[in-house]
Length: 529
Picture 1 (spheres, one colour):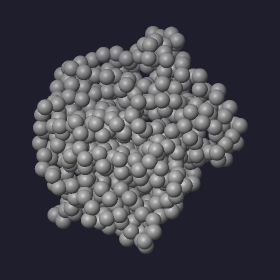
Picture 2 (cartoon, rainbow, N blue to C red; picture 1 turned 180 degrees about the vertical axis):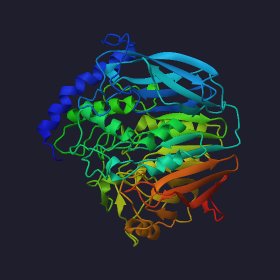
Picture 3 (cartoon, helix red, strand yellow; picture 1 turned 90 degrees about the vertical axis):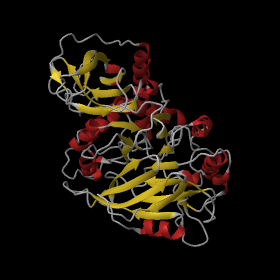
């Protein structure tokens, strides 16, 4: 770490109180700040765009953040220490001639003047348009869509998933293409921002060189990512379901454990509190995810009638520390400790019980890091990464055993983090290729992280050679488009050939199908669009 431990500690300790104050006041419905009676902004306050999220049959949560100067060094976005009343409207048409519901929300300085409006009284499976108003300023128009009614069986669920969008690594061209798709929802699986030192701008403007620690730092980094018009367009086009991985706080952190040996658990939890607050401030999350200091309730379920249910996982906040020294290693005895957990005891129980109780046709795990065995040693030994489920094998086995023992059918895991695409069967025993297949995993590549990438690299060659359950690999960037019906799951790998310069075309590199009742993945050899 380039910044000394003492400097880091001072910055974190100095701002921890501010984070706690903001959430406490928001929870009680008040703010210390006086109201701004007639807001007059120095610039467009809606430069960070609009978003919606966590759709339900009767509503969604609508998001924006007032920031006329998004990258202001104090992290306040150019806003004064005043509360602003922000109006919102939802209509059936883009011109807002048929407004169906409207309301007001307080944007407070304690939460960065962010707005999280939980809208109800909408109809299931409907497209709606929304916008915000503050003073004389009007936001861009966003489009959202409600979920089907709980007892309905929709003909199809169309969604895309993505992850890992390091700003200095490339242009968000994949989002430009995603925004043109016909989707019901987008799922983001983590690494929405990167906390590390930003190296090189590739023509995208000023990038701070230092790793971030303060609330202002995290706010600026989130705002910086949202200056990208393609990211804003994808948010405005569809509702999103989001979860995080590590870079929203710090690379490879685990619960209260920092990857920096000079940072104590107490100091790291203070940093985590600030990062969690900034995460909440910049994404369309409900009040149930409002942070309480270093804690934020993120794992949850989002249903799509009787067709599918998303079980959104949090694989960072409750996990055991990495075993065997972290990284790619020959597994040590510590990694086999049955007490080790990826999700924590409460979330493990919540997941197993929820999978067993769900009445939906398809069970979808929105999962951060690779679940299937990902051996890198083509020989008889094993060389495994310790930061994903491979470093938490007993926890993975408990989950897959629960799926088998409770008769959970049509399990599909969608995954991010690895900056590559991969398709695999999930085996009850990965050491036995003939073992029962209990589900499928679709790993999606990064939006930009890792730069341009290539169709095949050393890791892909090693994975395909060492893991007979794996059926596809690519190191290019992009996203995965999924179509889910009562009978079939189809996943299209939508990839771009480059990200270091703008304007890349998108193509479907490969398509895979899972038939309901038959958990194995099959390559679709028919033509794809």
